[in-house]
Amino acid sequence: MAETSKKAFVTGHPIKHSRSPMIHGHWLVKHGIEGSYRAIDVAPEYFAEFLATLQANGYRGGNVTIPHKEAAFARVARRDHAADEIGAVNTLWFEDGTLWGGNTDGHGFAANLDDHAPGWASNGPAVVLGAGGASRAVIHALKERGVGDIRIVNRTLARAMELRDRFGGGVSAHPLAATGELLRDAGLLVNTTALGMQGNEGLPADPRGLPADPRGLPADPRLLPDHAVVNDIVYVPLETPLLAAARARGLKTVDGLGMLLNQAVPGFERWFGVRPKVTAELRSLIVADL
Ligand code: ATR
Image (cartoon, rainbow, N blue to C red):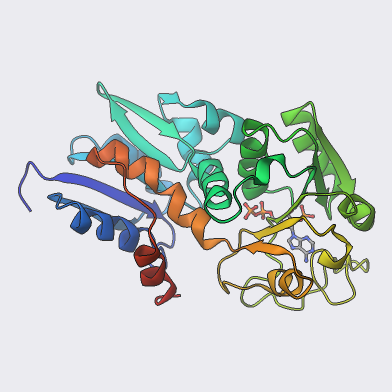
């Protein structure tokens, strides 16, 4: 690769299962860009050193994933608004020699719904299951898109309350036991928990003895109104038990793969100067690899 070629990366620990090299590699070829995007495994104790040597190593920037998203947040020189709201950084780039950190997960979430359920943001109250890092990105995006009633449901109520306090107006916090009542007039249900992920199927919604749904789903989509949209941010499997149950109930469902694909768009544009498209071709490429 020539010295002048454009270089970007994804770093995590471990990193070998990341689909990001396939996504960015596809776009590099599509746009005929002389550049590279590689996966770099960096253990937490070397992360600071890794960041400090990026520019000298010719990188324009890259993606950051588990377990480095919070460390990147603390170490970048400047952050965008989304990163500040979410409290984590997943995208790095240089501007005039300064290392910037952004967060594109919320954008990925909203763009996925735009692609597959247009009009979703004016569909009514949103119920968000889970109160971890992924939930913060989802709530940020919901607020950005003007959803006025955001109901966080979490096994550990205190974590939902923390997010409610963090995000303020229009956001409320609820225990699992309230889920059924909250679904009755909801226009959107988003699962951000790992329930339904490959390996977690059939896990009771609460191992401490309060299943939210007798079938082990994080919530019962039969309780939603007919116009509701159901989104799972998990994408392995593509059709989670929650999405299957929602589809059987006749509801519009959106899987999580589009969030992964769309969160990659702003980074590629920053490093390589072209805004790439999330196409059916790219989606099939990744689906074949799941
Ligand atoms: P992420 O960054 O992917 O969001 P996380 O911060 O570990 O991951 O959050 C995982 C979320 O899934 C949490 O909301 C967690 O609930 P708690 O806050 O009570 O731990 C939720 N979760 C995980 N396993 C669960 C289970 N068996 N039943 C209900 N919620 C579960």
